[in-house]
Image 1 (cartoon, rainbow, N blue to C red):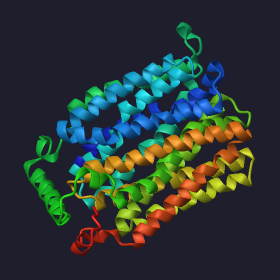
Image 2 (cartoon, one colour):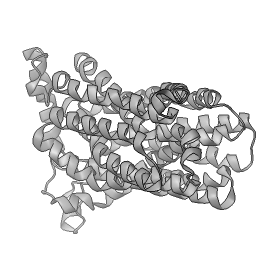
Image 3 (cartoon, rainbow, N blue to C red):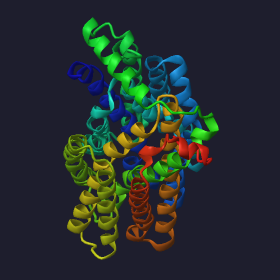
Image 4 (tube, rainbow, N blue to C red):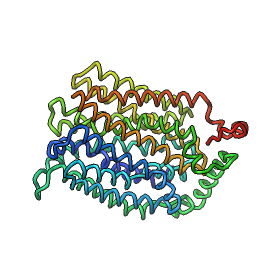
Amino acid sequence: MRQVTLRIVPFLMVCYFISFLDRVNLGFAALEMVKDLHLSPTVFGFGGGIFFLSYFLFEVPSNLLLEKFGARRWIARIMITWGVLAACMALVAGPRSLYLLRLLLGAAEAGFFPGVILYLTYWFPAEYRARIIGLFMVAIPVSSFIGSPISAALLGIDGWLGLRGWQWMFILEAIPAVALGLACLVVLSDRPADAKWLADEDRRWLLEKLRAESEARKPVAQLTLSQVLWNRHVLALSVVLAGSTAVSSGLQLWQPQIIKAYGLTNMQTGLLNAIPFALASVIMIWWGRRSDKTGERIWHSALPLVLTAVSLASALMFDSLFAIIVILCLAVIGIYAGKGPVWAVSTEWLSAGTAAAGLAQINAISNLAGFGTTYVMGFIKDATGSFTFALVPLVVLSAAAALVILVIGRDGVRSRFSRADLKSGKIEI
């Protein structure tokens, strides 16, 4: 397992790092781009959020195609197309081109994250998943921790070859996506059976362990695609994931502007913006390991969501720069600490036959909520002139997510395959 981890997880982390950087660098581009193109907060919020609309529409088809064509080729395809479109963001000249390119970028990137989560289930038994998923997903806060000062620095390349700094930022941060897409074809193997870099004995051991686990979780009835997509537990887990994913999306795009509103320079904003993500990167790994060690998932998912809701709500009472940084640190820690346990819950509650569609649906719906939060935050900022009130939707969503995971945990979803449930007409995954 150590060999498998070292072979695929660091590489996928770098891929996800670049993916998330290309998705949220619009937040730093906004420090100059909004003024250059005369974009209102509502227009910027809609442009930032429309990414998630196409992301939602193409998520499930993308994951199903990954199973058909193989993870290695499909992940490579995703990375190359999103890299090209991320560079094209330098061509934005107004609201319409912003909407179009963000829409295309969402379609191109759709399927990467749930595809990787599905891919990890091919390689890692359940007992390893919370820590492995948490380790993989640490690329999200790391992308902002490292990417914030880098993006701020690239804004300073202003006027070279007639381009603005934010245009150079989009171009230069997109190049690694294309390079890594090509590298996928060499580094990744579709499944353990294809891994020539594993010794025969190790390969047989891993395949047998995964096969036994799959047999133990085999459902008593086959579900159709529509039954998987609209299963109540899939929908409930989508709400839970929205509490971290959509809240994360809203903060990632607006946080640089929230911090800069205190009269800071771009570089000062970048350095302060990195602090919450540095802390979250460490705690995220520790919390995932703790969840695996104890075998507990529900409270490890719920408590971070509660921390996010309470900390963001406190922004209504405290308004100094120091207080805002502390609030953002606690909120970001809560957002990312719970991701590993929540995704571990999702992979453990889905059978092998439903995982591709189920994981994609969970991620798609949770990201669709990101469209709403990003747009609503811009609308509230336009209407009130306050970033503080714009945080209220994030408070509500993270609190609702915490409540939902506690409810479905109390209901004992692990009995989902019982014949009594099926006979009563409740088709569960």
